[in-house]
Image 1: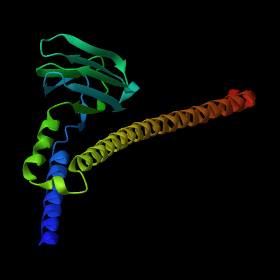
Image 2: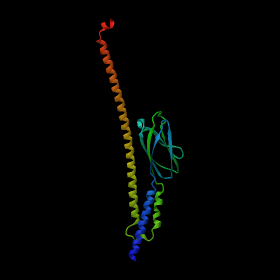
Image 3: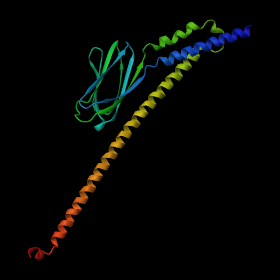
Image 4: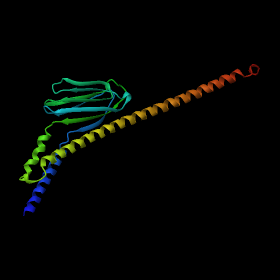
Length: 225
């Protein structure tokens, strides 16, 4: 009977850990997005934030002439918190208040080239920690267990944060790789264009030189008769 009670408590503890783990991973508040900003256009996005939370925005221009764009971040009251002018990438972190934050990407300075832009939002202190404490309501009489559930939760949260950080780094590396690939392809096309132009000019110049040399050595007496 004693052995069955210990097994039951262990099962309850495992169930609570599984519920906590599912809740922790379902509360992921990080997101990334890639879009095309047409020439002469300005696109704005909105993010609802809570008071005393943290908002981090990181963006990169993956493709487009000069790989640059204007950026602006506005608070819920309409004040400009951060702005960039003709930059290819940037990172901005702010401590937020209650309301909707607006961030815009501006390509109105370019009348021809469109831009491919990647940005990532990292939201912290949005209240998920309070929800993650609900696992305690499922545990009854688990104080006799040798393993503390608090230690398990700390370990799981640590693993979750490390996995989230790894995902963010991998996403940024993919963005860097995409931008470098687009830049190399653009340089490759430019080199091919100028090479073909140089070859064409050399052929034309060579033909003109041959024609001029032949005209100098032609027998003018035959042409007069």
